[in-house]
Length: 248
Image (tube, rainbow, N blue to C red; front, top):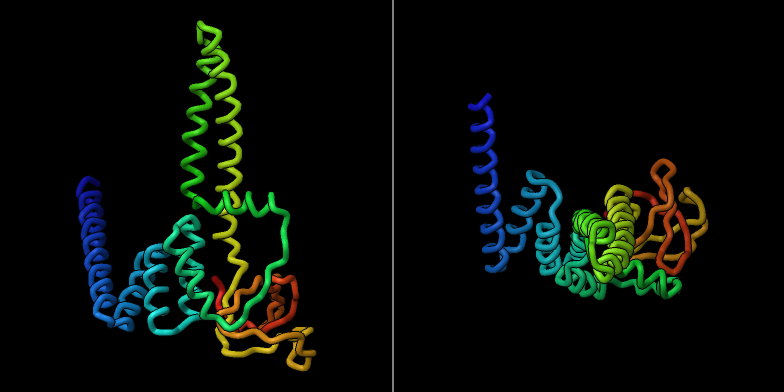
């Protein structure tokens, strides 16, 4: 058993070293303008290591340089999903969106809703989970201050601090749960066809409702065979064949 664990440990170390070498190789290829080569390495790393915000971000940069806007947006969106509070990812995502043809105005939402969503997106699932754990520990500490503090000031501090950390713990858990659901559901997609007419029904004979271009972001509401009902940012709904988009 001991030999088995030693073997596993060495394999993990070797894999980490191999991954770092590959990341360095991809970075050098990108710096030298060999974007296609960098793409191949990053895609291979995703297959080997699984999802990574950093790799999706770097992959998005490569596709952006190659003027492959839909692929750039797709990878930036995936990076944003894993690390929503990363400024570099968010800035590059906005830059890539500017290269897309469609400019769809979002439906106005209540300012408090926008504020809460912006606050939630400051952290990922793991980050909010860590905050939940830390705030719970501080809550327990505050309880000790309240129940066992000999001075009135300590009891007051413990009481109000306990309320604050309890509320923050609950909020952090809610945000962690919501971010986790976003990772699981994957209800958004990016259009990859240069121009596609969206239909009133899941059939080619359906009425054309509106047209979307590559790079547009849509929300998937449901699927029926090879068709999916989608909704765009302005609230309009229509049907599109699944071959025309890739899920984030």
